[in-house]
Image 1 (cartoon, rainbow over the protein chains, first blue to last red):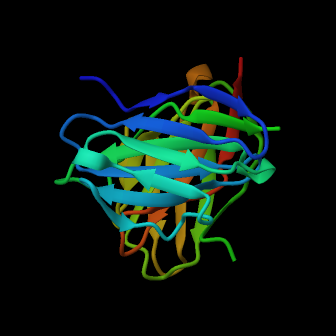
Image 2: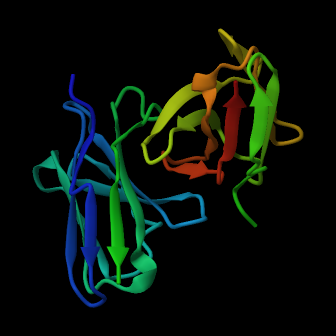
Length: 114
Length: 109
């Protein structure tokens, strides 16, 4: 069974540009989560989808971040316009509806804003 | 105040040693507890859940003390392959995870 995949693995953009990160969860996992790790800090929750609905977006830092999960399959996280402090590793995780706490993480997207 | 606090280490131990990591959490309403393992530049992977009665999985033992809001992980007979960062994870009423910053372990030959 394929795990959680994320694209791209790395992205280097300039301040003010736009970047879109993609996450493909494990098939059948209704729960999809986005997390971020800024250098030197702990991994922090951004938001949680159940199918196509945003269940909890309390961790989204500001309105420059937009997450979508149209159709309840893959999800995108867009940062527009990017700022220097957005640099970090963005992880996606998914879990089965029957076991929401067993979250499987993707390899992450390393975003560098210069 | 951080939700989850961990000693970042690093812990450098010889092969075969026993090592223990501790973690405290601030929210007394926290419901579920986990230890994740993260190798360098890789994703976190679930090592084990932590139950109130304590639980063991091979060389790994996890303990939870709700009164003190404290979680521990004990690794016996350390192997070189145990070298990694160990992340303490706590959930509350929702599904979101609260992570500690991680404790770095290096097992030395």
